[in-house]
Amino acid sequence: MSIAKGIRDSIEKSSWIRKMFEEGAKMKAQFGAENVFDFSLGNPDLEPPEEFFSTLQTMLRERKPGSHGYMPNAGFLSVREAIAGKVSREHGVMVRPEGIIMTCGAAGGMNTVLKTILNPGDEVIVLKPYFVEYGFYIGNHGGKMVLVDTAADFSINVGNIKQAINEKTRAVIINSPNNPTGKIYSRQEISDLTEMLRATGQTIFLISDEPYREIVYDNAEVPSILAFYNESIVITSYSKSLSLPGERIGYLVLHPSCKDFDLVMAGMILSNRILGYVNAPALMQRVVAELLNVTVDVGIYKKKRDIFIEGLSSAGYDFITPEGAFYLFCKAPTDDDVAFVRHLQKFNVLAVPGVGFGGPGYFRLAYCVPESTIRKSIPKFKEALESYDTKA
Image (cartoon, rainbow, N blue to C red; front, side, top):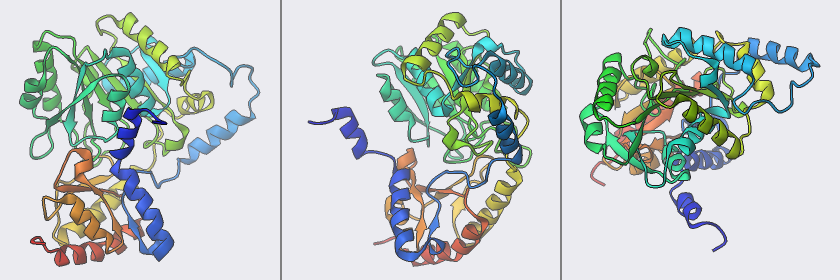
């Protein structure tokens, strides 16, 4: 065999998102991009804010020695100081720069954390529906993903998590605002979850994956896990808040009162290095440190959400209105979500089956697309639903 069995297996069950994205490329070539309604990929369609470009130009004109050289693997100290101040203000916990690691996006941060905390066979609890890459990240480091159902409205079911915990449980991953549902876990949910984790008497890390923290609607609050639980790690990126997914820049935060803080931080800094990241991109570190209070215009995403939910609701679709992120997780008219997604393709609509997120019977729509795409797609969604034979 020319490649590792694990990679071969992963190729076979690789992301539905990419499959649909590739299918979309073929359809656009056949029918014209303007006639294909592609909601498959969560690739922000908003350009970065103007402040990003002006800051980047300023940085590029500088000739400061060492600006593009090696640095501490955790990142520039001045950048981590700036980030620590932001996190302390937003999360209500005094965070030290020594508890920050600048990472190659949230994915780099997640792998750095899991590399540090997992022994072979350790288990990580993940709530369904979930971001599809978590299973691969956990498997990268010898762990086992344990999937747990959320409630009917996608809120946290603490009882289900408690039942899944055993002596091998090392961490719980939450993602809020959630991909694919747009759900934000409430303060009460976080309080109940962390109270249960403390009661186990085990050291179980709570990892919060938060790349959509800034993308929230209707004055919604994203509660901080740092305010509730000492064994907590927050991971985030600027991929969505500044529309910089290709720049691979983010950071992770370890709670300052975490047990064995120094050892855990030393392990994560080492992992960041030996995984091959070495350090987060130097230029992007310095840029984002100057943009602490800058985000894309979230109002644009809210308008798209509102247009979409009004149109899909009038067309007969059932869903829970997303509180954040830029996804709709719609109920399919059949338990076979893959079949309905294939049916949507007949109308040049591209969605992602919910089964790929551990949510069979649903499909995900990413509305980070032009407003015109959303508006023009609504009649197609209506035709698709009206023509679908649930008995076929």
